[in-house]
Length: 443
Image 1 (spheres, helix red, strand yellow):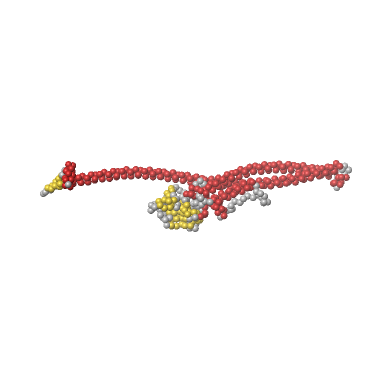
Image 2 (cartoon, rainbow, N blue to C red):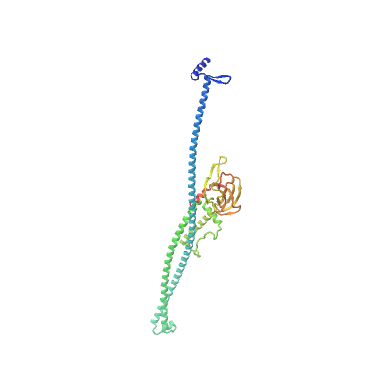
């Protein structure tokens, strides 16, 4: 049965692949190779598979090439968009920096104007007190003059009665000690002149008091205007600072109290006004002035606190953000890890600045960080500046906000030139952009 099946298959194959012979001739001999139908089928199948494989491989290569071209074009477009976005962000950052500088200038001008207005207010209040004291003296003098005038009138009336009733001179003798009529007439004339002078003085005093009252009214209006301007200036100046500290998650009252306890500036905190030494209750203007002085003291303490907290930007020239705070992929290992700071990328040697007043506690090499500067600030805050190419401060050195502390580099565990900037509160890393963004609307 098997032979019959084989014969049948062979006969079918012979229709399509008849037996062929391939002759191989040499100089001395001639040979041939017989190609049976099965052998030809295998050869045909192998050739067909080879051709099919070549076609499929060629198609795959062409598709990959087309796809790679599309990917490259897409990558180029994405790169162009990314560069355009970076340019836009850089322009926005430059404009924000200019706005912050202008705001700082306006803030300084407002402080200068507030100082001038405070001096004017104190001078005006002192002058008003002097005028009130002068009015009190004039009123006291006027009351004394009125009493003297009434006494003079009474005495004159008595003398006139004595003259009218004493024609024989008896009463005069008893009243005037025997004085002649001429002396009495002179006394009467002098008394009348004194009375008239007292009346004129009284009228002048009344006119002067009225003028002083008008001056006091004008000064009160001026003081009220100065008070309103000062109150508006305090509202405009203190509210953004208070908002800035709260946006950074810093307790304002605790900070103000801490700064007030450690304040060592010239003159000390502003003290309340007091115009009375007799224990009298303060006037409404005094209370109002003291409230403004309290706000000015708070503004001054906010200004000091702002210098001691890292609200500034460590890079002042053109830069771009290359890595934000939070989890990210490790460029070395490819794994996920916590990025405890913010990366600023710029040219090698770009100047770096302290973001707040403080003391340098580390300036040297640190594993992973490369050349590292640590600055300890008030309120338990520490800032770190890593991967520097050059250090410009030493351990124990006191630095001010905006002071140059080093140059940007690529030391330590990095993939390129950049600054790794950290902010730590109580030893715990926090997002530095909280402070930088909180200050954008103020400085």
